[in-house]
Structure formats: C-alpha cells, structure tokens
Length: 276
Image (cartoon, rainbow, N blue to C red; front, side, top):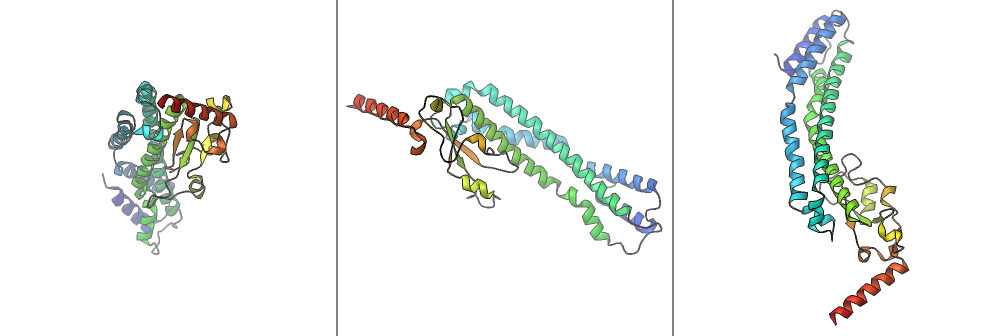
C-alpha cells in the first residue's frame, strides 16, 4: 500500500484535475487517507511497551527503591511495603487509563486529518482547479498527524506526573499526613508553569479532618485546605508536587493552636529530662 504522504499527494492531484464532482470520489479518497494515516502511526504494541517501561520505571524508583519517602518525612519504610498492593493497583489503573487516552487521541487525530482533506476537497469546483497550492494543502492536511508523536509523548509525561501524585496521595492518606507544602516546578528550565501554581510555591495547606485538627492541636492556615485548590498534576501537564507534613513541629507557627504549642513544649521538656 502507498505511504500516507503518497496517498495524500495522489488525492490532491486527483481533485486538482477533476474537482469535487461526486460524493463517491470524495469518499474513496477519504477512506484511503484514513487507512494510510492509521498505518503510518507507530504500532500500538510499541507504544504500550514504551508506556509500560515509563510508568514501570517510576514505580520501581518511587516504591521499590523508596524514593517516594523524600516526599513523606517521618513515614517508615514498612508503611510503603504494607501499601504495595494498593500502589501496584494504582500502577495498573494508570496504565489502563493512559493506553485508553493514547488510543482515543490517535483516533481523533486520524479523523481530524480526513476532515481537513474532505473540507479542502469539497471546495474544489467540478472540473478541477489550476490554483491549488499543493504544498500548503499537503501541510495543512498532514498537520494533525505530524504532531501526534509529540502529543503522545506529552500524554505519557502528563500521566506519569498524575501517577506520582496518586502514589503520594495514597501514602499521605494512610500515613496520617496533616498538611502539605506545595512545590512548584517554575524554577525548572523550559517548564511552562501556571502563574497561580508558582504563587502556591512553599505554601502549606491543611488536610481537612486530620487527627491534629480533631484534637485541637492545629488549625487551617492562610493558604487554606488542600481540597480548596486543584491538586498537584490534576491540571493538564502540571508537574507540581506536595511535600507532606506529619508532625506539629513541621507546621508554620500560625497553624499550631495554643493547645498544640503546649503539647509540643511538654514533649520537648520530656525529651530534655530524659537526656539530662
């Protein structure tokens, strides 16, 4: 079968010579272009292998190698080991979602390509036209498909960020985190950060209903609660993260109640007495 480029070239030449003289002619070339476009793409099996490798390496680094503990100061390693079945389940879920998104995006890009061709071809009068700018027409028809590999890479990057965020959320929920400090990636060269995410950098958000709030040891700070803002990686192509806080001593002073301060003072006094 002819390549996608060859098929588009032949289709343009045919309409340049004959114009839109029948629906059958248009349908014939539209079907050929759709088939050639689909066959020109990287095989799904190859993409699935790349996706498996990308998300699998994240899981190994974050969970098996314990790198995720950097986002959860004070959480012991055995907590991660205990949560492995849930974390592994999140990997499987993210793989399924990512594959589905890539497939849907491919179908949309192929359809957009055929729509571009049909829109152009149906505008050529019967009998053809000598005024066709062949290169411009080709570029316009191929535009969606040529950007697909880039979009697929971005999809993997976005899903990877969402996967990391989900892993962290599972550990924070089970581990009893009381707050989270936002970390923006605006310092990273080339990163297209959102201005409001940059403004969140370093702010500490309380986790609603946590044990410290229920005991009257802490209160919500100026930043508010985590459920009042979008979460890290929730928005498309967001690579921001949280560093979760589990202890009163890690909170900003304005988030600790008087009862909490008294509790901390009592603990410090007890530790000092033990060391004396």
